[in-house]
Length: 385
Image (cartoon, rainbow, N blue to C red; front, side, top):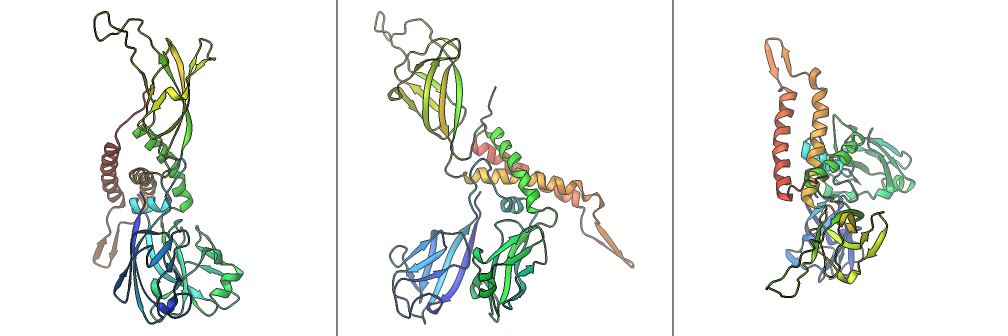
């Protein structure tokens, strides 16, 4: 699922662009991925209203203060940030895996060095940085904190996640000149981001199998059904008019976006008739109803082409995928834990740090219980061949 992190910043009007007492001054948030929901701004302890006193551009994380702001005014910002929402055919990201499986360690504001207008390469203390987890800052605050530093735009640097190598661009070298450089990130001691990536596709396909549904972006699918006509009249009264029930077909997947076509095939598999779209009804849950055409008898002679998918992967599906991928990550770790030291003896004193295999086994059981709960909530809908 998308992970929401609470954020807080204390700034002053002097931190905004523009001149003292002017309207439409702007400020770029220290944290990327801000959302408008629950965004709170207090200026000198007075609450401001979105789209009345301020706007938020979520693409650039920039606040525009519509009302006038003076440099001396204290501004308090409270908001949430979220990770990028997965889409396509894969349903989670590596940062979600690291968080749900507990295979990541957070590093907060590690100092990389001081810009000298020439050096462009800096290394983090730890490697195996997880994608989407890092943020660079620079500044000379006496007590460094995210709210006292300037967030570094991604155009000012590049990063190689495995070794934790930072390379500044020419503009980046200029921006940090004479200033200390910091980075916050999550790193995985046992597995690289590249290795965690390999778990996502198989975990996503397992989610498809468990739920009997596709949860990615819209795509086209084709299904074939048996046609059926009983040949017997159906009436509501003796000798009454025959009532032909509307033909219904249940598609394999949910979240149907549109029906491209419904066709009746002959015994050679060629199209014998295409049903007029005016006589086709469908429900998002997967039911297709033909309101006029009589369906001919046959085996796999009804061909339905349709579009199915989601604009973004539902939160529960993201969590389920991350948990399944997280189990793969923990199994990988447990396979190499046979040589891990679990105790120390110094003189007459012995220390125990716990048996890693048993700790992982207990974690896997807890994760499986959560997986079972989510699948039950989503609904078991196994595909039957």
